[in-house]
Amino acid sequence: MGNTSGRKSEHIRICLEEQVGAEGVLTGFQKYVFRHNALPELNFDEISLQTIFLGAPLRTPFLISSMTGGSELAGVINERLAEVAEHRGWALGVGSVRAAVEREELAATFAVRGKAPSIPVIANLGAVQLNYGFGADECMRAVEIAGADMLVLHLNGLQEIFQPEGNTAFRGVLARIEELCRKLPIPVGVKEVGWGIDGMTAKRLHEAGAAFIDVAGAGGTSWSQVEKFRSADPVRRIAAEAFADWGIPTAECIREVRASVPRTALDGGPHKKGFCPLYTSRCG
Image (tube, rainbow, N blue to C red; front, side, top):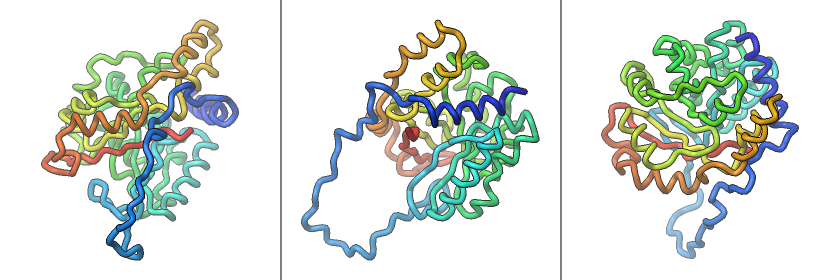
């Protein structure tokens, strides 16, 4: 735990200074273009981007997805992101709050509600931590620290494998996600960190009770690349480099999820917590 704050700072430095973008894999959106409509039959001044996300109003359907936290610099970044999101009416997700759950002195680096009083805020924890002693109480503590309205669990198997401090006991995570979705009084979503969620996985998560999904497909930051630059093990670095082009393009993830999850769920239809997929990719 003592190295958590340093690791978070290291992540920020590497993302700023090193080439950590996915190589040879794109988001997939380059295959699509908007088609011109010569007869729109609407008034431009009446166009609105406002929407509702799990009961929370958004002026624009946009999410800053689970960025950072856990160090002094990360706290400054979170404050600035919160100010921008509040000004624009976007949703905001903070980075993994695990560090603050384990070390109370880091809580302030995730406390964005003061800068973002009206927008949806999403707390974040690694799903694998459910296999390492984290349960409903720890998850609700993460939500309290961030002043959040909901929680997202991130799936980052490849990153954990290449991270020197990684947690790699992945068996049984889905069952623990389902148990958590039943216990918590708030929406619980699931996200990837840059390698994508396929249609079948999305269906399993939906059936387990996930309230929303952020597919976070390939084409942005590669966290295997980030961890490569942190590793002092030459074999681990070579292995991480082999995954520089790994992942499912975001556009492909969206198509698969749409085909695999029932339309009623995608449209916010019958579901104990509702379901609203967030189709976003890591910035990079």
